[in-house]
Amino acid sequence: MSANVALILAASAMIGCGIYLLLERSLTRVLVGLVMMSNGVNVLFLVASGPAGRAPIVGRNDPSEMSDPLPQALVLTAIVISLATSAFVLAMAYRSWQLTGHDDVQDDVEDRTIRRLAETDQASDSFDLSSGAAEEDFELPEEEGSRG
Amino acid sequence: MLVETVTLVAFVLVLRRLPPYFTDRPLTRSRYWRMALGATVAAVVAGVMLVATEARTAVPVSADFPEESVEYGGGRNIVNVTLVDIRAWDTMGEISVLVAAATGVASLVFLRTRRSTIKLVEQFVAPPEQAPPTPGPSRHVWIPGGRTLTPERRSIIFEVVTRLVFHTIVVFSVYLLFSGHNDPGGGFAAGLVTGLALVVRYLAGGRYELDEAAPVDAGALMGAGLFVAVASGLAPLAFGGAVLQSAVVDLHLPVLGDLHLVTSLFFDIGVYLLVVGLVLDLLRSLGSAIDRQLLREAELAAADGAGEREVTS
Image (cartoon, rainbow over all chains, first blue to last red; front, top):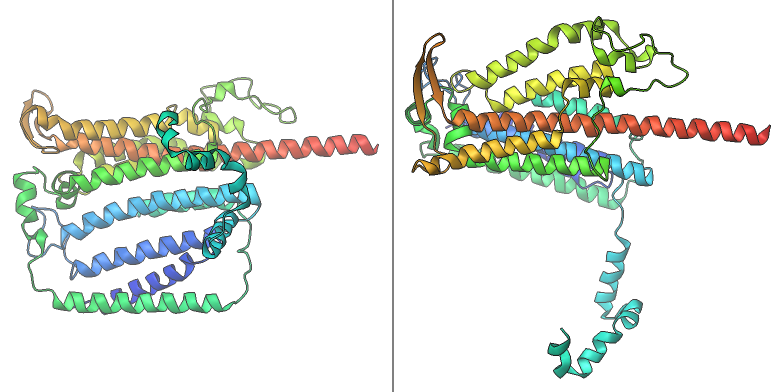
């Protein structure tokens, strides 16, 4: 089975650009990247289905001339899901614009703080304030069952 | 393609609220890393696909699909029989994803609830500066929702064409739904065509027109679609079959002639309802709700401007 080089090149270019855009901060770029990637993967399905044939409808065309129906069904599933995904990312970008005035993905500041504390093996300031009850449990482990 | 059209409409509906330019970002070293990563992945994908297609020796799994689709699926359109019968679990998972994504979109835009948002033209209250051109809803208009728009946003040509084309599109989509088993068509295509008819109504007459065209809750429509699909999948269990198995019924009706009914049609009807609900939900959330938010912001800005003028005078 011979490969279709033009389709492979087009698909790999789309997937490469899609990955570059997907790693951006702004959700609009992420969205364009997602759409490009899903289109690239769909083109790869075309490559896998082999040379183009007639429409796969029994009675109209001879089965030996038909193109492979399975990749077509898979692509049909994939494009509808990519429609739903892109609508969801669009709504996310819109909501982010509504809240912050831009559509960049925010830094998770809390997460970064926790990671820094974990690296230096420290407890956070609020840990001592909120964990008074927990320390009591540590001192009196036999009462744990009656409390919980 | 039908899907691309729906995607394009969704894009445009949201893009009117997004910033007009991409944000600038510095050309840092991490960007070159990302470029390199993208290029590497592209090269790997191209290499794998070249090697994989050249190395393929086995017969495709779909070699027997033409016979099986006629024998067990009772249909001649192999792709559609694959979707609703041979690989119906794929479709089942996919429609579940659609419901989840549409619910996510709705909750991101509506925030609280999407119920009680259906407003018919009778409930429209014209803003004070815009005198209503007709005293009430009359039968002699091309589309009823037109009078809810400001005159500069209306297009009479669009309204007339919408009126003439809408019903034809819907009938065509129902034809696609029922003929999909043997000819091009199927639940997805039919649902998207109906969805596009709704898109045309919305674009021509605004959000009141959309509610006139489809006075149902989009969530209820999607739920009904999922229910029909699941019920038609479970129904064969009652007759001793497997889940999602389909049976072929050949009837002879007195007037209509021979009827070739495959039970997987009901699964396809579920998919159809769900896709229509999805498009309707996207229009309601990304179209109507954003319209309403824009209107409210404009009113707030006008009220602020009036207040400031009073203070300064």
